[in-house]
Image (cartoon, rainbow, N blue to C red):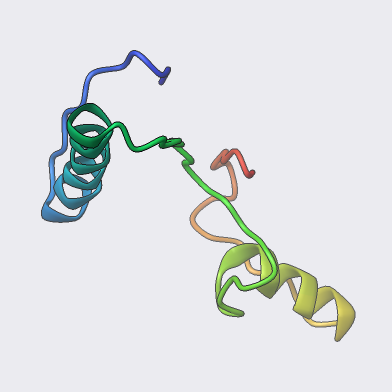
Length: 80
């Protein structure tokens, strides 16, 4: 996955994300609007919903609760 990887959405959700990128680029080309587009796969931050993985793990550690393991635990994710 690079900045030059062509769009190939396979679900309505991914198609909506691709469409929003194209709309932003169209505004840039049509109106000269300065834009920045990022392709984040998994990100987190201070306003992340508490049930999402990173906040859930942190909360569970702080409260001495078990950490969730999904599937066989061999999945790999990149986080920004």
